[in-house]
Amino acid sequence: MPTPPIEVAIAILYQDGQFLMQLRDDIPTIVYPGHWSFFGGHLEPGESADAAVVRELQEEIAYTAVQLKLFDRRVNSHVIRNIYYGPLSAAVDDLSLNEGQDLGLCSVADVERGYRYSARLAEDRPLGRPHQQILLDFVAQFQGEF
Image 1: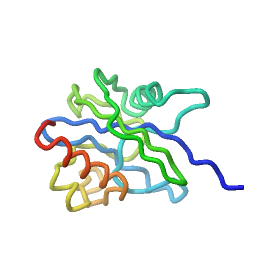
Image 2: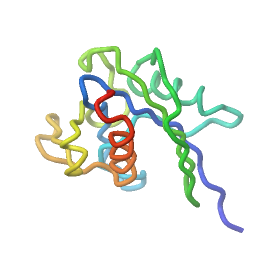
Image 3: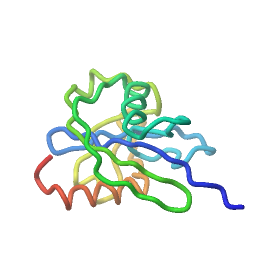
């Protein structure tokens, strides 16, 4: 019997035409180790995606999103991604990184090339492939509105 897909809630947070991203830890047993991705995570049993994205942002960066909207829900055989978006109303330096090894704003040019520089590691790191595609789709749909 096939394993049911996991369900996650993730957030595209934007500020000044850029997107807040998390550099995941270099732990080989996690999905996309050492890649830039969105903040968010798994839904708890009985938890809605709306509640999960708010909880995950609090846990991962001590941030309370003031306005999140559902952008898309993408389903494949392994994962269901509930993708939210909204403005980042705090300065990046005011966020507390509680998960991952770096965070920062990613430009549209970074998204297009698929890499972003990590100041903490002093090297370029790739964006996770699905995260890059989600951002490319977001940019195409909301051209200049973020």
